[in-house]
Image 1 (cartoon, rainbow, N blue to C red):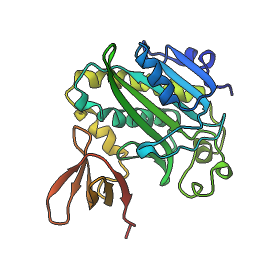
Image 2: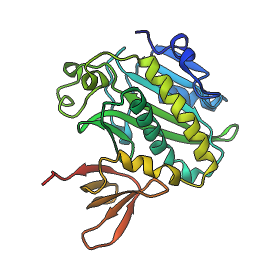
Image 3: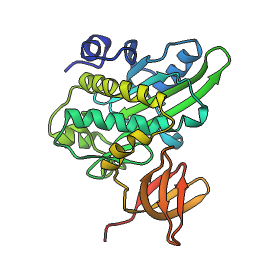
Image 4: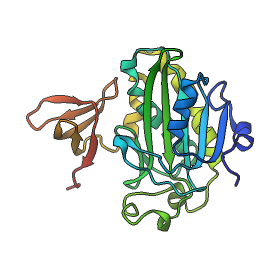
Length: 267
């Protein structure tokens, strides 16, 4: 199976914009960082940067992101949405949902879950992470760089010891090696119509049923590690603006904007 390069990805695309410009590199410090620099120079919406290695790759909250070279998918996508900056946090959830739809199309027998705010898991182990970074430049306006790290063909023993019990890959889940170009193209094919629909809407309302159908947290007792401290309650899905709906022990409903969700053990 070939590398996720333009020659291998372009024939599989049915998008009009996303992925029609694609840069494939063996190694860059960070695909998000490189794409942000290209965006500041005027790069067009839809540009994708793929790298086999990114030593300075990061996840949410500035955590380092492990990715086995030439086995996984690490890429970034440039968006230039013409809307209020307050809606930008919704993009991470839209990305997670589109990637979930793509994987469901390609691997219908795998039960992959969504975990707020933007993780994909298989059998409780992390399959994918997403990092969205935005900026406003005087010359080119709002830019959003969507970074995705998807574990595709990484065998269990290739994960660092501290990740082996909580990370997985499509190869582990399916039992065979997978085509990274096909996965990248399918994500872009799924994401473009969702993105265009979302741009015409006021929020994520149209996507809430699809999210709930794969929501790992729904109805579960969780503790959210937020910047303001720990908050515990029962998860009740997400609100139209992407915040987590949390039913507190005292009966109140609160909305959580950001944080790490930790599931309570099933009784």
